[in-house]
Length: 419
Image 1 (cartoon, rainbow, N blue to C red):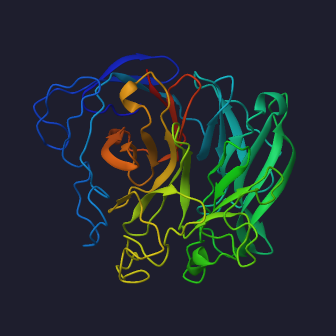
Image 2 (image 1 turned 135 degrees about the vertical axis):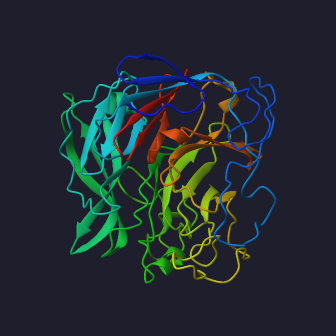
């Protein structure tokens, strides 16, 4: 049994634990500030949800870049633990029929029905190196999946004693027991003998090309490669379904840069999502000791790592230059210090909970919650922490065909969040 958060009412158990969340109108909210009567769409602002001390004394570049005012969901919604039988799930995406396709870190996929029933492990996937942060990572389905049943995924691959982030594709067999004709279409080189910072999120853009993220592999010797346009490390990459550089990329025709690069200067991007209205690409990436980021990604721009950052080495030493803003390098729209370890993200585009519309939801690992960011005019104007009492490392989150949010955790749970 999972523990029930404060102010939750247990209303039933079907295939999993279900509890209902409603607006709390008690004298004080979780942060100790006074509550007012709440209604759907209430714009009351509360104390920032982060109350712990920052690791640095760094000053933000603009007001609201960190520790924005708290907000609270006022609509009733339920949270259901559909399953706790997954094996280290890493990525989750919705299938056209409403079921969910999920990667498991060790190298298999599973399909989950909306009642939480899990399929047998889907095999036929190229061997992964699942040491430490590696394994079978993010996944997405072809826009024409209903016709071609094609699946695309990222994974950590060992080649010649070194590891790298690879992208592969294959067809989900009609019996859904295996991936047919799996093939690697892209390898993010150079390889490196490390099992850290693979990036690994992947999605399709509106033109039918693939966008995915890579990490800079963490080590001091590879960090500078995030700034090196002749490598694929610390980048967001845009390719065709055959693994070739996509037309219209920002460095197309530039002999000093790889033509598949979309943006650079990233540390370890584990969240990618398109805004449902503007179509803009957003990402989340891990900082070190402080400095987790949310970025609005524009083609060809430099996002600063490791030259500028709002974090420190784990030893407490300064990283890069002793500044946090530098001309020619982009500022994060938002950052956290201390970190929440932001992983998978999704924008809410449903209408079941109107106040969530176009909000960004972030699966937090070390934060053990789901963060909700309210964004207006490309600025974060409010933050909420959901499922804080679950004490789960939330790895990925997506919106289902039914308008609910679905999240997976490192501990093997699949959650449904919504009406």
